[in-house]
Image 1 (spheres, rainbow, N blue to C red):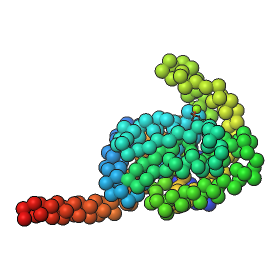
Image 2 (cartoon, rainbow, N blue to C red):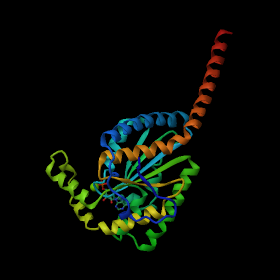
Image 3 (tube, protein in one colour):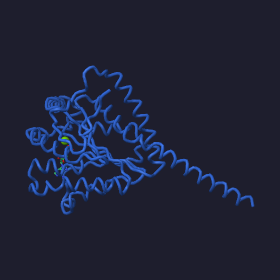
Image 4 (tube, protein in one colour):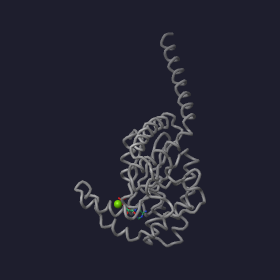
Length: 278
Ligand code: AMP
Ligand code: MG
């Protein structure tokens, strides 16, 4: 079954060529049951990350308003042990944030070994909203792609952080119906924001900014995946599938690390018991 679209390093992304809907003929019931299985696998993989303590995982979520960043986090929180997960939501920078370089607030939220960080928006806002609204001059945001690549390769190499970045790809039409649904549904109306309708007017400028960010910053050790996000059940499947596939290559090493830790603990216990009897 096809799933998220991996952006190959140095390729040029054209978002209109990537579907926002599931491939034709995909069965929703089947996908949902596969997603459940993937969530079980994720649960086990997270236990291994934590117990082995050799790697961390950084999940970056980007997407337009209503694309499902919050929903994705809610779903992931049902299968992950939230004790070892840090969710960081990056909103408009504070005065203190702005007094530092743009990666300062990001750096503080990166995961330590054994842990997972989920970024709801991220360092990429500084080449998205900032670019679309001219919050800094072009020569400033243009340099940031390289800064972001350096930062990501630094944490990948220096802290064994596995980085997986998702762009939740929705259509303009689906965004409209989600925004309108917020007006009709009392449970959702707290999310209503004039800002979302205003941002919608910059749809084309955001498309260009996203295409550049996805094209310039997808690297082997920090890949971007474009997730068809018009259907929530398919979005959740894609995210779970990519995460499992990104973590599974490490499974054997983590199991070995666990075995080693277990052996050492047993030896210490045996020595303790021995010293108690002599
Ligand atoms: P929300 O995710 O709906 O809570 O909205 C957060 C808002 O903060 C969005 O409109 C973002 O574009 C905005 N935001 C996030 N990071 C930055 C940034 N670095 N500069 C300016 N605005 C930002
Ligand atoms: Mg919003």
